[in-house]
Amino acid sequence: MEPTSGPVAAACVAVFLAVHFRMMGPEIWRAFTEYLQMFQPKPQDSVEEVAMKKRIEEGLLEVRQKNYILSARLFVHLMAGTLLLLLKISVQTPIRENWLSLLLPSMVYLQHLLVGSGLLQPGRSQVRRYALMNYFEFAAILVLDRALQVPDSVITEKFVLANRFVLSMVFMDTQLTAGGQLLFFLGNVGLNWYSGGPSLGMNLFEELQLWSATVGLSAILEFLVCARLRAALDAAQHEALLGSVQRILRGVCDGAVLLDDEHRVQGTA
Image (cartoon, rainbow, N blue to C red):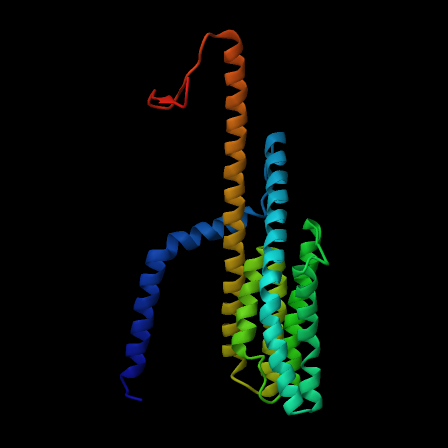
């Protein structure tokens, strides 16, 4: 290493951090203050706001239910392909590790098959239980496959990574995602430590980044769905209020027209 490479690298890091915090400092501070406000006592919501939050929660549960059923109809075919490949490997190389590696993917396939075919119809409140089952199943698949050291395994890093992001997107439950992704986090860190892989610090950093990405993705999707539901409910309330006012006016007036903010006629008189 050149003698000047250390100071140059330190200067580059300092410049990079200065630019980063100069551009994103206000956003970091805003997020930090909002996080602190979560622990402060909040004024009691009005009756209307409580009712609105309840309707948004019901709508979010319905979206999660539909997402899960649609994903089960799709991923049952993908899991069928994975099972066929695992079965082919087990027949060609009939060792105990290969046959054991079929067990947990078969459970995932069976769950998708029952839900996708309509034999099981999970209710809105039951979707979280199925999500927990999926998280435990895929985390167990990861741990079992690495522990058995299956030769020519199809349970690759890409397979596990893809399923981690799929689970985050399908269920859109930030609290559940934080806990479920923690199973993968602990599993990967434990397996890396046990097998003597890369340094523990680097492995923790990589897993923390992946955990943050999956949880953040789930939080963004949940926020967007809730915002859309609130906008739809607000619009429905506005239309209902407007319709009731128009009915009253029709009873006491010869005619009524609806004007916008610029006094232009909207709709038919």
